[in-house]
Image (cartoon, rainbow, N blue to C red; front, side, top):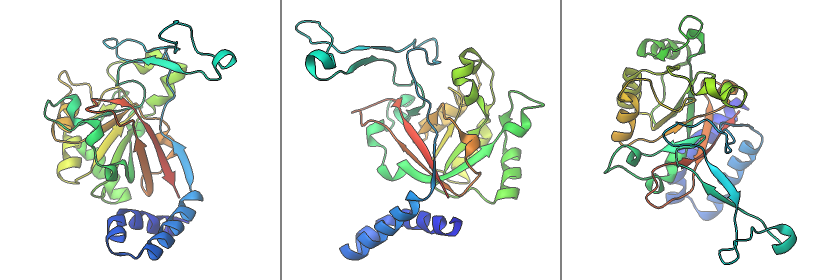
Length: 269
């Protein structure tokens, strides 16, 4: 299964070649084979559910979710009276598991509707910060930590999505106040710079609500002002291997959007 899955990854990343040069019959057969392999894989949800009591930065405030009403009568729609029901959502874009597009920090940056589709399915690398937390509960994953990971697992591949596991996600529902703590385990700026400049990764993500705990959010500034997106408040990274998986991440196509709740999941051989 591992060998077949790696073959699938290669074929997915070579999809542009297939679309450009393969005959329609050959293309359909290849995609059918890919789907059959993926359908046998294990799927892990990397997304938190969210509600009105979800942990969020105090500067944004909690979401409000109310029954949508008829504008004329102000009466909420119900299944009994109208045959349907729906919800009116009022919340900041950076809520729950969410995407930060470059435009979140950069006036000239790419908005979420402009991010290429090919950046929404990527090889997934998981860096594990948890071994360092016993001695330093707020450990920032360093370049030396990354080099140790690469000695064990091999070089981080170009084009990957790299996620930082800290197990903070376990406090999301059970202890939301602790989830909002500061400082917290996070990225070191030099590690983020190394990943994008030396390993040429496409995107990064983490479990906390911020990339690091520096006063000016240096790592987040670096990522977004250099044209990359990130996924914040990820979950279940402890259920994903260090390498060999795919991540699929998607979000609504909001015109000129500056952030929104996202859905991310891993496909694991």
